[in-house]
Amino acid sequence: MSFYESLTLALFGLGLVFLVLVSLSVIIGLQSRILRAFTKKKTDNNPVPSQSTEEINAPDISAGELRLYDVDEKTAAMIMAIVSDESKIPLSELRFKSIKALD
Image (cartoon, rainbow, N blue to C red):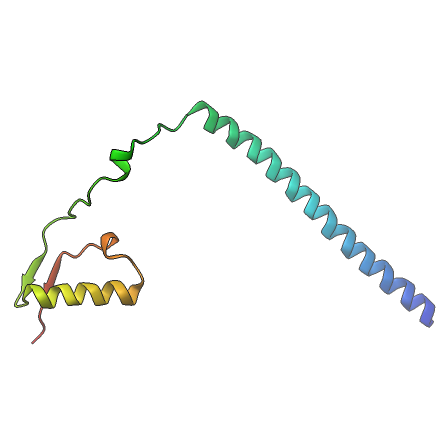
């Protein structure tokens, strides 16, 4: 196989791969538009009720009762704050059921 035949074959292979990638991109774009059209129709049929400012600014509701076993409230508050900080989850989204001191 000569140099020019090898070069022609390599360019043909690269062109074919590029053509397949472009066609996949077009197919994905068409599917996205089709799915967006169907989901838009569904959301139009089910309008979302608007929330009043009272509902949005509602006070936090307690997630239940916290049971403390051999732990004072100050230590429990510190433990909850540390868990919230280390896990990067807001304290309002965490739910503690009990805190027990280990001997």
